[in-house]
Length: 377
Ligand SMILES: Nc1ncnc2c1ncn2[C@@H]1O[C@H](COP(=O)(O)OP(=O)(O)OP(=O)(O)O)[C@@H](O)[C@H]1O
Ligand SMILES: [Mg+2]
Image 1 (cartoon, helix red, strand yellow):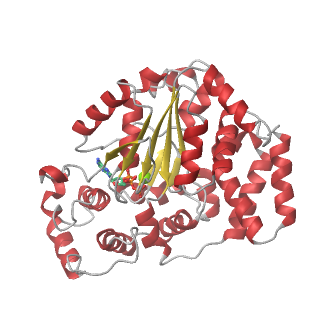
Image 2 (cartoon, protein in one colour):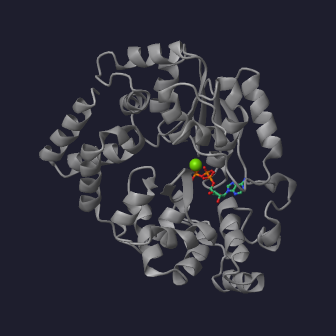
C-alpha cells in the first residue's frame, strides 16, 4: 500500500511500524453509523478533558464496538493517529501483555515483557488503545494498572464491567431513549425489533437490497412469532436476529452459506478474504460475500477482513459444523510461510495454541514456539 492510499484512508502516519498499526489494526470509520451524534460529542469531550480509562458498557449488539471505532476516528488527531484495537475477550493478563508485545514488536519473553511494553508506550507519545469485548475483570484490571503510568488512554467495550477506577458510559440502542427510530427505511419495525441495532441494520439491508418488501418482512416476523415472550438461552440468543438470519439463509447460495459456516466457528478475530476462500472452499469469494454484505450479515472490522457479530454467529452455529483441525493447520502453515503476518493473525495463532493444548498436540505446540522464536518473539 502506498502512502497516498494510507492518507486517503484518513490515517496520516509517520513511521513504518505505525503504518502497520494504524491501518491494519484499527477498524475503519464505520459507514452507516446511525443515531450517535450526542454520544460521540460527549465521549470525545470526555477524552479531550483527560479521561484515561473509559468503558462503554451495554447489552450485546447495542453498538459499543461501532461507537468505539467512530470515537477513535473522532479523536485520532489528539493521539497523533496512534490508535490500536485489541479484541481481548476472556484472555488472561499475561496473554494480553503477549498480544500487545507481538503487536508493538517488543520482546515477548516473559521476563521483561512488561518493562519493555512500558518503555515502548512511554517513549512514543499518547496512544488510544481500545480493548474490545472485555470479559475478564481481573485480567483487564491488571493491564490497566500495570500500564497506568504510560501516556495511554484506554477505551473498553464490555457487556458488563466490574472495575473501579474506570469511567463507565452506558451504551443503549441508538435513539432508544428518545423513542425515535435510527433506521428510517424500516422505522415501522423499530418496536417489533425492540430497537435492536443489529436486527434493524439487517432488516434495513434486506429492504435496501429489495430482497423482499417491508410488508412481506413484517408478515414474516409476525409469522415467526418474534414478538412472543420466551426465555432465551443467553445474551447472544436474540429471536429477532435469529429470524432474520433464517430468512437470509433460505435465500443464500451454497458458497455464501459455507462462508458463514467458517466465520461462525473460526476462533480467531477476523479472517482475510484469501483465507476465507480457502477455508470455505469457495472459488469466487467476492460473489459469495456480496449478498452477505448487502444483507449486513458480516462485519468488516478491518479492511478486507471479515467476522460475524456474536449474535449472528450464534444463529449460524446452529446449522453448520466446524473443521478445527483443518483450520488450525491452515493457519500454522500460513504463518510458517508468511511470518510477517503474525501481528495481524495473532488471534488465530492463540486459538491454535489453545487447540494444541486441548488436543495434547505437542508437535503443534513446538511448531508455534519455533514460529515465534524465529520472529525474535
Ligand atoms: N449506531 C448504529 N448504526 C447502525 N448500525 C448499528 C449501530 N450500532 C450497532 N449497529 C448494528 O449492530 C451491529 C452490532 O454492533 P456492535 O458490534 O457495535 O455491537 P456491540 O455492542 O459491540 O455488541 P457485542 O456486545 O456483541 O460486542 C453492527 O454490526 C451494526 O449492524
Ligand atoms: Mg462489540
